Amino acid sequence: LFDLAISCEVVVCCRVAPLQKAGVVDLIKSRTNDLTLAIGD
Image (cartoon, rainbow, N blue to C red; front, side):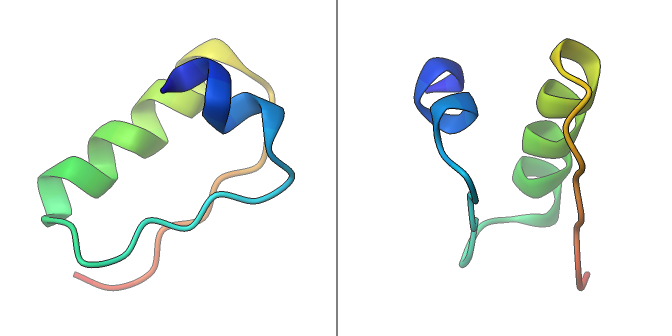
């Protein structure tokens, strides 16, 4: 999934638990220099 996510211009995660959303943000921030934004929860 990481390879798919970094090949996209934008990734939107909706209807996921706050912990899952945080995990996605941490994964992207730790492996890339891409901008991340998490809204809500």
